Image (cartoon, rainbow, N blue to C red; front, side, top):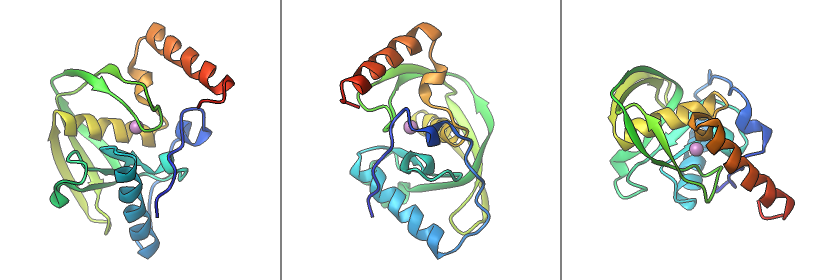
Amino acid sequence: MIHPVVKYGNEVLAKTAEPVTVFDGDLQKLIEDMFESMYAAQGVGLAAPQIGISRRIAVIDITTGKDPKARIVLINPEIIVTEGQQKEEEGCLSLPGFRETVKRPLRATVRALDRKGKEFTMQGEGLLARAFCHETDHLNGQLFISHLSTLKRDLLLRRIRKMIKAGEW
Ligand code: NI
């Protein structure tokens, strides 16, 4: 089932999500729904709060569905090692229409549980490192705009407020 993606301004995006402790059929269904919703929105990553569910689950596929082996499920993820730096444009399904240059580590190692509850670690580089960091931020109530300068962030938020007023958000 495809869930609509909630946008900036919805309080669920600003909350710290709850850890997952039960790895049952409902969780498997939710994970499938998250992939489906992410592909429908043409994203490379989606965190559960973005479909209104405040739990520590994220799905990533930087091939946008082209390679079935590229599907990654992160449950209760933590970034444990970072290395280097990259500066690239970043967007978010919860901030449609906005892309900004965001500084991120070039390499990031994430420790997480898989969909069955088994712990694993994985190193990502480039876009994958960016996705690990971006999605983990979501589970801590943070959007990429928290990494922008105050000036840039205020400009962006002013534009969003205008859109909200005009009923375009
Ligand atoms: Ni996002």
